[in-house]
Amino acid sequence: MKISSNFDSGNIEVLDASNPQQVLLAMRPDLNSHHFQWFHFKVEGLTPGQRYGFSLTNAGQSAYRHAWAGYNAVASYDHSNWFRVPSRFEEGALNFAIEPSAAQVWFAYFQPYSRARHDWLIEQALNKAGAELFATGKSLEGRAIQLLRVSRNPQARRKIWLIAQQHPGEHMAEWFMEGVIERLQKTDDAELDALLQQADLYLVPNMNPDGAFRGHLRTNAAGQDLNRAWQSASQAQSPEVLFVQQQMRAVGVDLFLDIHGDEEIPHVFTAGCEGNPGYSARQEKLEEEFRSRLLALGAEFQTAFGYPRDEPGQANTTLACNAVGMEFDCLSFTIEMPFKDHDDSANPITGWDGKRSMQLGKDVLSVAAAMVGGLR
Image (tube, rainbow, N blue to C red; front, side):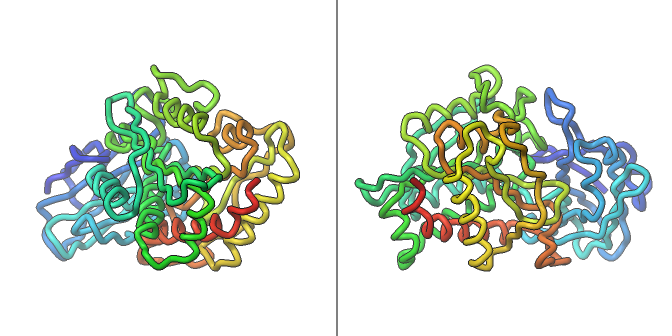
């Protein structure tokens, strides 16, 4: 048996593989940071039908140790089709086992979104979805951060921004963006056409390519949590955020959506700007309308579970959602998807996955289309 993680978004350390019934493993912390929770590794040389067990021994010291309760790891024989493996959090370790049907299997915290697929997605956007490469930033390690613009009407007044994967382990965020770009390829979508008559779309499919490639959970190559850098972005620590802020200030923002994943809560939900200084009745009404329309659409979404609401004036304005909502006086949301499942419509085979993330991206475009005329 061979265990490896020396590939895109790979993360694991082998402590003891002498007993195939209980292989002892550990998750590697983010570079220059104490955060860890993401894992992604390949096991080769297996005997189909034989039982193999794995233990992530440091799960109890991870960034969100309470999130392991009710969580099941994902696995794949082809790195394309992923399924859940029953998992148990016991005595500080996450344990799971499999009787494989093939000689190799991958395990991960969530269905990964590779850099190769990201490159393919950018090509799809440029060649099939009518997007243009509006600007390109650079990560600390020199990877491209593409800002795409979809503009079909020179007279369109509204600017709608979607960014994803500030936290690199939240791979569901780029699956969401793939759903957005896939819908943009449709040629007979009256709803989308109406949206693009009034608004230009600005899309950043991956804000943190260094962290994603390195198998980080939370931070970039400097150990910076990008979603805590929106009041202090710098070329030295967070050029990814600085690049996007500069572009926003050049073109403006009327709606901002920051796409994320949440480790603990088994639901899709939003977080708004209610704690911002200057939060207005207009913004509150827009937030309520966005949530109501997404519910009415029948999307996988709910409003009963989520983060505690901020008290007036007590928002953390280093977060992208709050910083952008405050600076541009606009409707601004964080959209959170689960690492576990959306319990309102649970799927024990897949849990929440890439396909469901993509559909949510498509549904959010419908809400934007319905609301675009009233954003200002």
